[in-house]
Length: 306
Image (cartoon, rainbow, N blue to C red):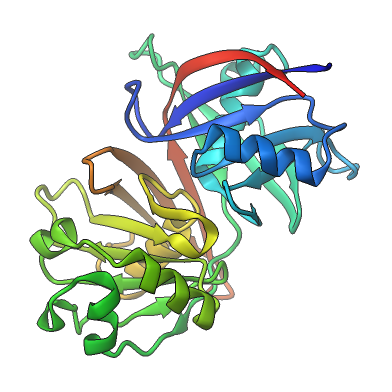
């Protein structure tokens, strides 16, 4: 019986038991897909990250992510959690102190890059992890209010006509509502939403509003992905790349030169919430480069028997 080290880390939060928890399993090279899926079901978190040796000369390690139901192609909070686990385990102890150092990570679709930012005035939360996301690709998505309201529990007149729905390259649909109260009160029918998402080939639905409680928060959201086994995710890193690019494109977030900076919050129905920082850079070809960041909090570590 083999043993593997694991960590449970809360991401996009400076406090334990907030943000979005992810399990990280180190040295997972010998696991089969079936074993990884079984372990993800056992943790029963929105994502479990498996760290293994890279097959690419361009990255030292490879990441794979599993929900309790299936493997997914991209997970922001699972990636940031993996970086914290690698630092805690001694693999990259100097990373937070080497300003500008980039760590490339192999994933199924290519290479992701991360870097750390030391926060000298916060000894208990010593660094931010910045993740360079794939360039967002958005396309229009027709919303029929009567139909979508049946699934999302949003009033038919609650949708924000000034911010039309869009679908990202990850299969997530961005849907905006006018009022924060409608966002917080929504109680989707997850059975119907899962069936609808499967029919439409969505990964998930990001329900968002720019009507926030403070001007320092530019957008607040919730994220539903019942078709991949996650009824509601507390904080979804990957969707904030397309979300940030969308807000810049539509003039909600001002740019300074070619750069925009924003803060976003996401929560679930229980009130568990997290903070995402994002930087959007417009490139000469009019495309966007997006980087998101979050703090992390170590909750648990131990040995996994396989």
